[in-house]
Amino acid sequence: MTIVKKSLLTIAGLVASSQALAHADHSHSIGGVFANLIHQLTQPDHLAMIIAGVVVAVTGFKMLKSKQSEDSKDF
Image (cartoon, rainbow, N blue to C red; front, side, top):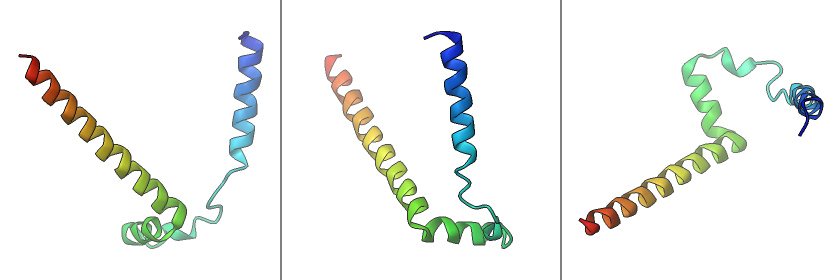
């Protein structure tokens, strides 16, 4: 891929991402840490990302643990 194509794709990505302002008014940040925590746990999109992160972490931990147990059997 040429430098021109990479530059155009980068610029297009930056322009497109500026249109995705999820919280334009930022009113949820006025209440401090507790309000932010409640916001994260009550909004479906944020909650889905938290659950996805936990699933990935647990799956990765299980895979790493099983790989380590397989490696210890070789010795």
